Length: 304
Ligand code: B12
Ligand code: SF4
Ligand code: SF4
Image (tube, rainbow, N blue to C red):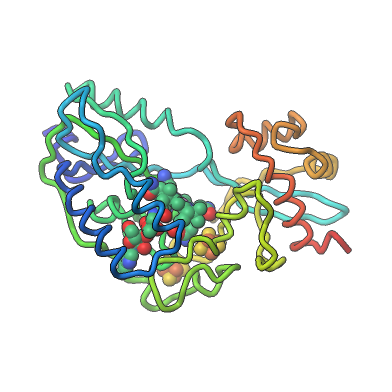
């Protein structure tokens, strides 16, 4: 039996499931029910109604299935030395293009005579959960067994027929029912105590990854990282394995000062750009120096 006939396979560190393309019809219904059940904000409505593409383009080959893939993020701790003290945060490679993963999967499928094409803008978490690959955490992101939530998801259309697949209702992790630590650790109150769907425009990630100003309502105590936000994942007991013995990347006082005075990632010294390869995508990421300043101000009281 080929690995493409099994409900779930792992190859070269990529786990994937194959489901019939018709499952997308049920995803459409899920989205309608979601819109009816929750009062979605403008950003959520835009994603659900305008950005998600639930009819992937047909053409180059007959699309018989969807392949949902998950792989681990590369994570490390970045430590910034500044004025005799040190502040640290988690960095990960979620900004880097996943072309290597796409290529490896394409080769695997083509070796068995099937086509595979990456598709963007599918509801990845829901597909990963319904296809049995992941489970939802109360923090609204998904977990893949002992890989925890520091993972990345991708979806592909393929000509391979789906056999022995799993297609289940959304499932949240049993551990969440007696925990709730992520709700308490969210620095902006984006994880709501009385509903599962988060308030995504309150999520620090939404503001940290933008060159627009950070709104005044975001508390100074929220700032703890260079990009995005890791608070609801760091506190989670189900991520403790991934966060043990993390590699630490040290930034000297001179490097930290140089980062603070740069206009963007592209203006960082070469030594810093090499160590922070996670953000070396050709994009300027102008928000990086700003976020470093806010993080140092908060964690070290650097302003004073
Ligand atoms: C827009 C977006 C964002 C927005 C909004 C996120 C949000 N949760 O609303 C912002 C910028 C804030 C963001 C933040 C983050 N994101 Co984001 N994001 C996306 C994107 C592009 C779309 C997701 C989305 O908003 N969907 C629309 C809303 C309406 O749906 P939803 O969030 O999926 O909500 C579902 C659940 O609430 C579920 N549900 C509803 N009711 C109930 C009830 C129960 C009981 C259950 C079990 C489920 C359930 O149904 C909803 C619809 O499927 C996806 C990629 C993609 N194409 O899917 C990545 C994606 C979800 N993000 C990802 C990541 C890693 C993050 C961050 C962790 C980044 C970071 N380090 O800060 C944070 C996490 C924030 C959080 N706690 O959710 C990963 C998730 C990986 C994982 N482990 O699951 C994805 C899949 C990207 C990827 N390719 O891997 N993100
Ligand atoms: S912190 Fe607790 S409630 Fe939140 S996702 Fe992890 S186990 Fe679930
Ligand atoms: S990523 Fe940060 S701000 Fe967003 S929900 Fe998680 S803890 Fe809250």
